[in-house]
Structure formats: C-alpha cells, structure tokens
Length: 221
Image (tube, rainbow, N blue to C red; front, side, top):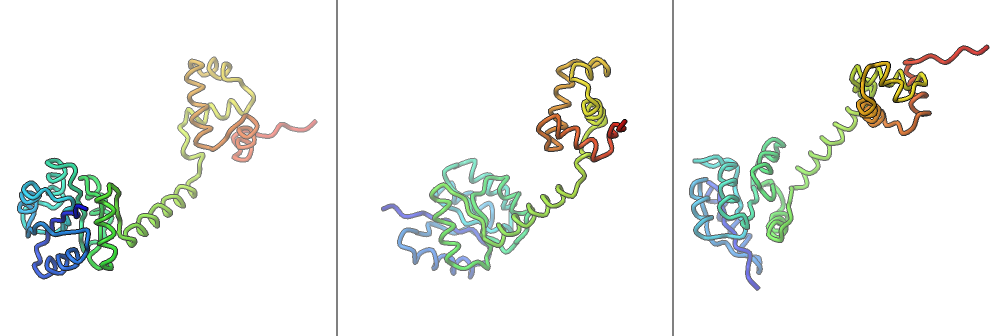
C-alpha cells in the first residue's frame, strides 16, 4: 500500500524534527521533505508532489495563506493542513478561503495530528476540537442574538403596510389596487413578510397583527 507523502513546512527546526519523528513512526506515512519558509514550501510542493503539506501560519517569506493558495493552485490534489499555535477564528476562516483542508493547533495531542493527516488525505477536512468548539459557540451566540431581535423590526416599511392591509381583511388584489402596485409585487411582499415572521396562513397573520397592535380588535356590539 502506498504511503501518505507528507511535506513539513515550519521555521522551527526542533519542531520539524519532532513532527518528522511522529509522522515517520506511522506505517502508512512518510516525510518526503521539509521547508523553513513559504517560498521553499511552495517550491518543494511542486518538486516533491506530496499528498499532504503541514504548513505553519507564521513563517518568513511570503504569507502562508498565499503559499497555501499557490500550492493548491499548482497541484489541487495536494492537501494543505495548517499546523499552528493560533486559535484564532479569523486565521481559520482565511485558511479555509485559500483552500486549506484542515486546521490543527500545535498543542493538540499527537493522535489528533495523525488523524487529521489521514482525514484530509482521504478527501475530508479536519478542525481541532477546540476550534470547532469556538465555531459552535459563536454560532449559538448568533442564534441567540437573532432570536432576541424583534421580528417586526426586520420588515421593510412597505411590508409593514401590506401586513396591516392584509390583516384588515383586504385581498392581495385589493391591496395591489389601493397601493397602486401589481398583484405580483404584493404577492412578493406577502411572501417575504410571512417568511420573516414565520407565519403560514391568514389566521396567524391576523393574530400577529393584533398582538403587535398593528390592527385593533373590532368593537363588540
């Protein structure tokens, strides 16, 4: 079985030696070369045609992000795995934008790096659990913020106008006539406002308009 060919790119010699020893101990992997800066990494990637490049983010010479982009452009089948000390979401996102296949923190257990190499080589992607946790926490925060935003505030003035008129009992055709709009335009406004408010029928729309005091309940005789 062919081994996974790995290129190490890091400007710290001792760190490269440690990773080389770790990778070489795996029966399905081999280190085919090393580089100490971005330009050397791109050149050796073109020359040695590795399966996976372990690329440090902060090295002398060209930006590691530009280096990753160059490697992926000149040989798309080569996978790029950032190996870095920076648990920074901006760096992670930039890495993904330039085509990196994974992002591993240097303080991760050795087993995670080995798993990451195998995963990206098979065509998958890999994020250090800590980075994945940060992304999940950020996503949850955004959801909570969105839930706290008053939905009515997301409507445009025209959508609010259409909402009021529909809730008052006007048909789409009548609203179109009153606002001097086409029926198709009013239908689009109706669709958008119901999507934003998570409303699915006319009864819910009327109920919502009453709750938000957009229209008043009719006076009982």
